[in-house]
Length: 260
Ligand code: COA
Image (cartoon, rainbow, N blue to C red; front, side, top):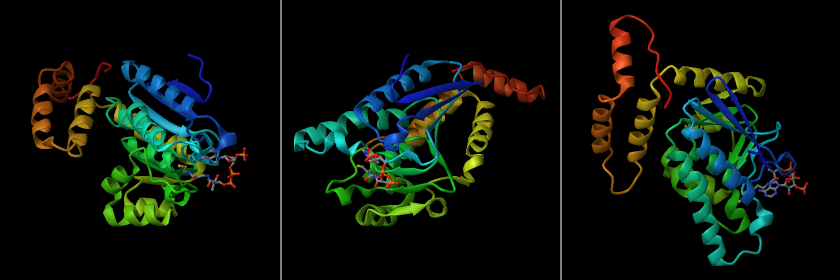
């Protein structure tokens, strides 16, 4: 599938998606969001892809936000549609994927860029990454889930401060806040995420997808996460992966899990 604004690489079960508009600091325009959606849909269904990495092309930016030039003259209705469509196609979509998605933040992650990273299942960052939700400086608010996910991840007080000041934080502060799990030198970002992805790949893909669903359940209003956990726990017992995992343990060998 030819893509204009993203590059997909697939190596030994790990798919890396590079958002590739470096001349615009990888800003998310309509085409990029659509391409990301189509690519993610395809690789989530591919049994050979066990972990997905999203990162930015070049050294300067992960994603510097939604493409400001595209929405500068929107009406209120068009603005609401932009947010709804983006959340549906990309941000909520990633959060619910059965394949783990890790954001490797290689530079600026601002606005929609930080929202994209927050929709991923977790984040690692290079030392030179800078993160923020600067939307209020443009006279708008985060619209791709930022007001909700930032509070969920770092707590309400810190989220309020970041959103209301429109300021940026550096990678070390993001780690203290729990916004990113690891901070590594820029040149080590690739090996850092490959190491984590390789560890994930040793585990049951079916159990992993059920765990993602159960953890997410805590954040869905009206859903009891403990009930989802009980159901998904039970479902695991009927899977080949469970048989393989427990048999391998008892036989003192490494489990060989099949694809998703
Ligand atoms: N949307 C559209 N274009 C963007 C963009 C965005 N979110 N972020 C950067 N760009 C473009 C710039 O317009 C510029 O394009 P040009 O060369 O055609 O003029 C190019 O990317 C390089 O950006 P520039 O601002 O010149 O780089 P810089 O090093 O001076 O500053 C940033 C870097 C990240 C501080 C700055 O680009 C910025 O503030 N971007 C917007 C961040 C933002 O508000 N995001 C939230 C959007 S809702």
